[in-house]
Length: 54
Image 1 (cartoon, rainbow, N blue to C red):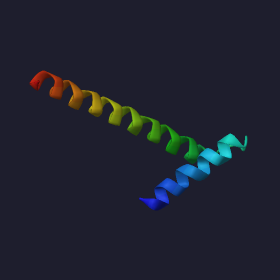
Image 2: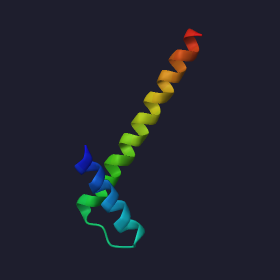
Image 3: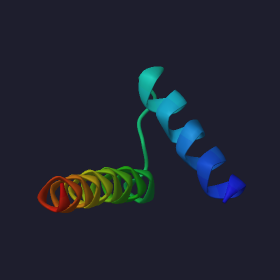
Image 4: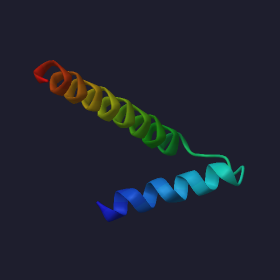
């Protein structure tokens, strides 16, 4: 949702500016990285399934 994306953006901006992140913000960044990895694996599985059907 929009609030979640805005939180991610603010955290990324703080990190880019060299501002010390709070522990909760590090946790959010780690969760986002995990979700990105899961999405990539899912996309690869779909691709493999489509290739096997061809």
